[in-house]
Image 1 (cartoon, rainbow, N blue to C red):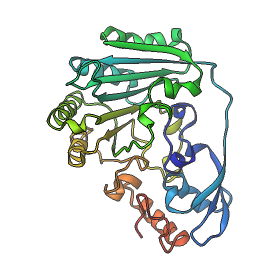
Image 2: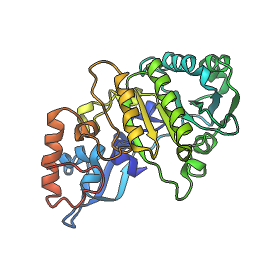
Image 3: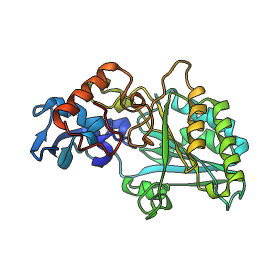
Length: 325
């Protein structure tokens, strides 16, 4: 939990409570000079701002206090639909309609993947879309109807306690996604909404990549569409996390570096005209312009650079997406 929190920390409960970072109370941190301090809104408040969004640049967190909440419901409903590529346009439009520019109910979220599933089609990637609802199957049914009507080739669903949700939907520590020794090379980009023609174009690029270079047949395009009510309720300037205006997080999980970078640009070209490209720090490849990761407002980078000089003047903590100074 803490690792993601240092970069913001997205997740299925963010519609209710915001980012993981938004729920931190205090951090016990060892600085580069060896001193151990407690960081909070009352103790080292300047560093408190930076640790929530760029925290891996400043020290080692040895322990932390975080808010906890009562369980929302006994069981979550989930549904996993798998579609063939001919449903791409209709599926994309249906997801856009449901998300409604990032204003979907806080109980509702989705997670999509374009990837090859040989048992269904050995040559063409399929579209896997998972929906989560904090409530019963009956309550979720109106939100699922359009996706059932699209005619998926596979449906799996159920109601289970939240801790079982990740493994049941293919994203838990006991699933192939997290197999020991499996390396993920990621290239993220934030979006406001899906552009249907862009999604078709990137799908075609994935299909061509896998066809021409079979060694890349585990490549995937991943779409995260969480509810955002809790995230957008927090003042964007109050933490170092700069991407609260993003409604969707896309990541390209592929070892084909040039292909992934070019595909990111296809996504960006299809986003709202004039919107600057963003990259979630926890997924960043590492060679993105620093503004994509930490924000385009000049004051953000100036503030982070000044704090880096103050708390890590010898740049000890520079391994992961370092802040320049």
